Image 1 (cartoon, rainbow, N blue to C red):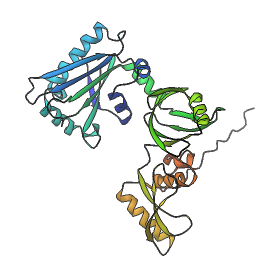
Image 2 (cartoon, one colour):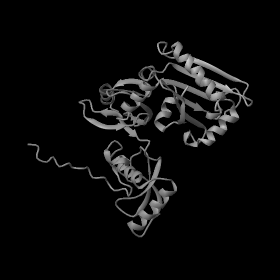
Image 3 (cartoon, helix red, strand yellow):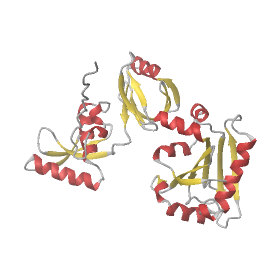
Image 4 (cartoon, helix red, strand yellow):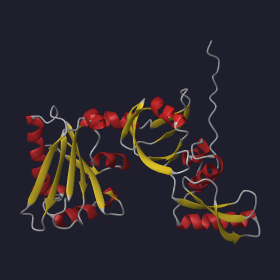
Length: 317
């Protein structure tokens, strides 16, 4: 069997968890396996749950069993599923797959027809599931992820696009009383999305926002939780928090704006916040988080707005 394995990308990590029936069917997901490892390699307690019987074919089952044996006993793949010790070593040697502060690791293993998204928890205790594996039809998964790159559209009831968020990003629904509820958005197709686990046509969601006197704002994962900035009307250094209007005083001032900006840049550097992110955060706090200026992709490395390119149409006669 030809099997390639590598750390999963941040986008692929979304598929190392259980999907809804709609997304799972579009990606050709037969089911999932979760397993518990011991320290010696003599125990691999595994359980299987079928999601789509039409995909859970004898051919798939035969391949999956072979993949499990390869990941347990073939040294080429680091015995990643042999026991907790070998899993820990493999994960540390492939740290690009880590997320959740190193508590979990995600990998993608591909055969000719299937992709296996493998989520490892090497530091789990006894009686704990140390591995979760989600198989997919490879062509179906890749096609769906490619389509999802367009993002999830949020529109007005009359169809005008307000903003887009990446698949798996969070949005905040602010109800009429002012309370905010953060929900994950998942791409289904160009006109449908799952928001907080509920399925919507994008126009239906827009009408619900209008009828309930609520609004939705993006919580882009490309933005930090907070950053420092300089108050536009003076030389005060302020804190901006992601998704919140306005700013927070910290009682720090400078003798001029240039010096104040240098201090804010230094503080942001300590937080690994780029100038593009800081510029987008400032715009979001002032003009609303749904505006294009609140997206860091619209700034260069110096935090300056990127001017849209104007193409010369030329003479087409």
